[in-house]
Length: 359
Image 1 (cartoon, one colour):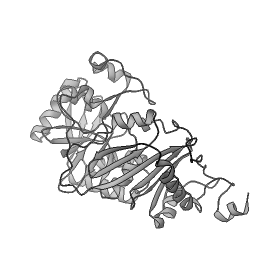
Image 2 (cartoon, one colour; image 1 turned 30 degrees about the vertical axis):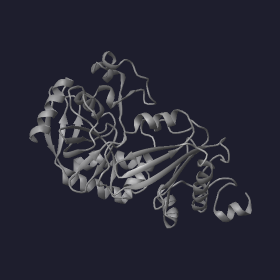
Image 3 (cartoon, helix red, strand yellow; image 1 turned 45 degrees about the vertical axis):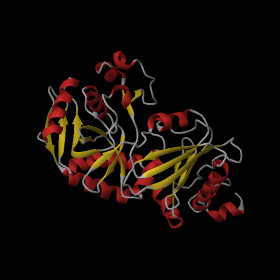
Image 4 (cartoon, one colour; image 1 turned 90 degrees about the horizontal axis):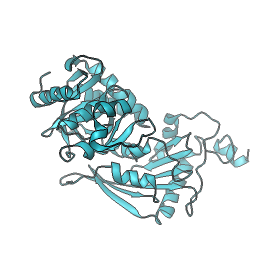
């Protein structure tokens, strides 16, 4: 090990440790400024955020174009800007990402080191991928080993980490959950993977209800509780795909990294994706009932359905995240949604609930 590496606290020369991460994060942002200038920008208007993305042609750029839902009306919003540059080794002026050294990797320690510099970062050990953001400056960079060396879930919700950081900085949150609504009012479906959220969303869409998201939605607690769309992605495992008759309706769609068919809200929705839904309840789906019913749930049950998956999937901001989800769970009534076997019956029950608000 070299003297300079030992002084920085790195375990091996050429690796990154907690003592050197702030310097490395700043260097990656500088690399993005120089190398990113040669990449064609894509501009997308999102709720409260004007997003610019620079990256080379490939599947990730295509996923951004296909899955992110652009905002159609932004009047009256206090808007921020975010510029994200996605780089990989092999591009002109771009170095390969440096791996983490031998010391334990603790996300809280990482961001404690970066906080005084106004930075946030996340490192993916499996892909040797760095994500760095300066929230105050609205700049971010993702550095990968190759053009397709991103996490397998990235095409379904591209730029998720950066959007999480950007919205957390202005008091809003990406929530891991599904939505259904009617005439601007709706419900949030919360729970771990496999709880029945996605099947319920698809059943509702097929019956004429609307949705602002099936996997991640943007929740705002100012002036009531509302959800806005960021991604139009829908997913169903092969059994659900067959049960809902999706092959006959939209044809076979490729399987993603989870072995699920991935498609888009516009493929099955009756109308356009609404710009927002005012949320009136949080529902916790549970499969296995003979018919669809709603049973009151405690704020504690709602918090346990909401917070763990969202906080685990979103790096940093754990303390403020718990406060946000605790506030959300206390603002809206919660219900366990016991799901019957018939998609049309599930959708009809939810329609009645959204229309009159009574379980």
